[in-house]
Image (cartoon, rainbow, N blue to C red; front, side):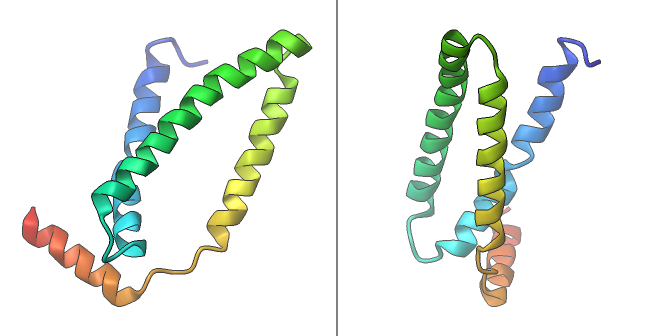
Length: 107
C-alpha cells in the first residue's frame, strides 16, 4: 500500500507527464487556430472537472451513505471517454512532422 507521501509523488509524475502530449495533440488537431486560447479552455475545463470530481462524490456519499454510485459513474465516464478517444481521426502526418520540426527549432 502506498504511503501518504508516495501517492502525491506518483500522481505528480503521472499527471504532469500528460501535459506535453496534450499540447502536441492540440497543436496537431487545431493547426491554424489560437493554440493558447484552446489550451486555456482545455485547462479551464480540466479545473471545473476537478472541482466537480471532488464535490459530486461527496454529495452522493451524503445522500447514499457510500461511494458505490461515484465509482460506477467514474467507470462509465472513463469508458465513454475511451470510446470518444478511439473515434478521433489520426492527425495529418505532414502536420505532425512540421510541428515536431518547429518544436525542435524553437527549443
